[in-house]
Image 1 (cartoon, one colour):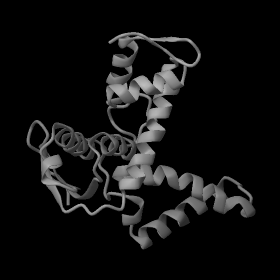
Image 2 (cartoon, one colour):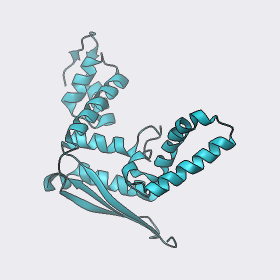
Image 3 (spheres, rainbow, N blue to C red):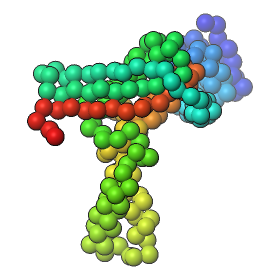
Length: 209
């Protein structure tokens, strides 16, 4: 790939584009343009591509998803297993490598991190209220002022959601702990150009009810 210059006169090399593509899984032209717009700053280019991906994914979020696949994962030793349904818009996308990889990654995420529901919206109302009461009691025991209890509870609920909601969990392959499962899905949506929906899952472990 030939060198080009950004608006800040920074040379954008093929190596820079390839490295950015490897880190983001975005198209070569998108990576090249992001580097041009950010003067060759890789971190800023990643942020720009991420913003673009989120915007693209949001536009697709209302599309109907009636195709898809059921994925399975059996942990070595055959004492832990996962079944997972992911929906997409077309059967063509369901057969792509990106979709298949996502299914495998999410199945292993479920096996490793033990979520109980897909998203915040799936949390039972009585379970949420019970957790709020526990957090309130903890805050009061710590001597927190009554007037800021709601704010404290709201903040601590994030940890609760991270524990039980698949989409809110930190992605197990992200060492920084900043990337959530929903961010991974957003990246795939932006790449394949279709809406995706994690429909449901079941996690089985020998000896557990």
